[in-house]
Image (cartoon, rainbow, N blue to C red; front, side, top):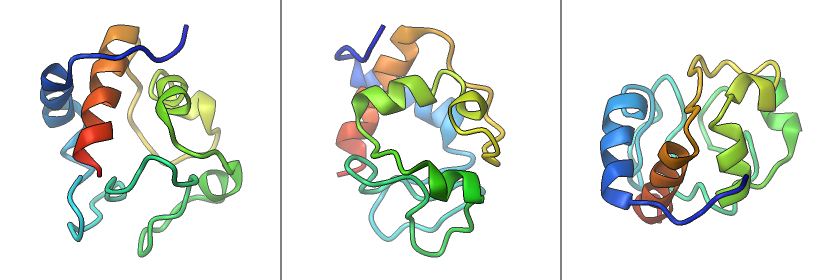
Length: 108
């Protein structure tokens, strides 16, 4: 299974309830427990300036795009063993599609 276009408004709700406590989206917004996600698409893992990543994130070397995020968000600790991201993941493919569709627009 891979990424399919989702519902951005449902993704925005998921972001608010599952992600916003640790991440920001806008340009110039601060890092929180997790890094700011502005400019996420096309960026390599572990590259947000001023955020302290684990070596596992820095060394993964994956470029974030729809399909890498689809796999990562199912189980972050499996995708990047050693990550400090405490989030257990979104098991439903539809939820991941909705969230990624929202992130693609909200992080530009």
